[in-house]
Length: 240
Image (cartoon, rainbow, N blue to C red; front, side, top):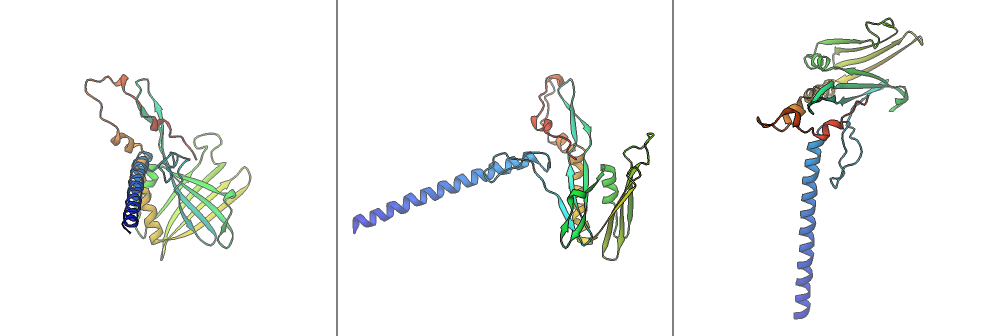
């Protein structure tokens, strides 16, 4: 009986040590994941983080709104940077909030192969953020503006208030192919509030200000030409 009792105590002790060791590893992995997620930020073109904290593929985190005749997603696209001769980085192209629309082809089915994009600039995002419950906004894009091909293809995004929220519609007119596509998606007040809050959070990232405010301070005695560029800046690529 004494041997059996000591054996049980020994087994329990070993089991407790294994559980504690496992819990410690779990906490360490969790902290690693938190650090990696913090470094990756909100990037849709950065690195994904697995449960073990290892780097994987890219991160995709769109916000979807599905309705009867069409659906759309809202996704931030980060800016691109250019490297200066001094080794510093400068924003080359500001980021955008990318809206992607797709037509419905059945109940809760959408044809994303026929998707159309509309990219909101930081200033246009500002217009969206200032909208009240009864306001309306309209944005026009022409990829060939100020050229001889102006007007061949135009996109217009309209946001109009209604009794239950807003109607968000995209119209794409292609005069070359003689086509005119239109997507209309009603959004509730709650869905629009999510869009505005997410866009407000994303706005400094679109301008590159999150990188600016989070960079390490440079010593006054250090030459700007000898500053080192954080490699994570160079991993940002335009992906539209």
